[in-house]
Length: 195
Image (cartoon, rainbow, N blue to C red):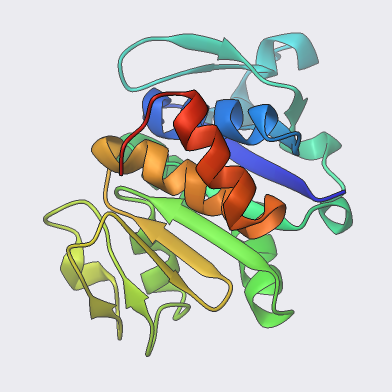
């Protein structure tokens, strides 16, 4: 069975992140919510339990399944980066996570990003020659991409989406990759979602 990971750093956009978790779990996929500490984390003595709580861009605290220190990246088939300006900045500042994003891309494994987070993929050269989309205003950071205004773009093993309003489309696209389009379409009908 496929296994996915969504990475939550302080300031993440909660709808973008949690919609993917919800829809993938409804489709029967295993998906872990993983906390990524900010730069200040090394300066405090927070317990592992505290490190599992991450505050969103709208001050919603959510408890994660794992911390990034507990993750064995070899177990996963896709890494998912939600947006939110601060959340995106905090994800990109984590060198260990960025090394894994690079490794997944290099090894032909799936990476996905929504809203501001596709800028991370642009900065890493992952979008060169690919169709990609992002939150309006971040287009210049999708270095080398054929930028579109579509809600979601799938280019080989790279998935990008525009923003919160495209969260269901993004989640269904990911579910379709791992469960098949028929299952994703069936779930869309079940949740009363019209494309």
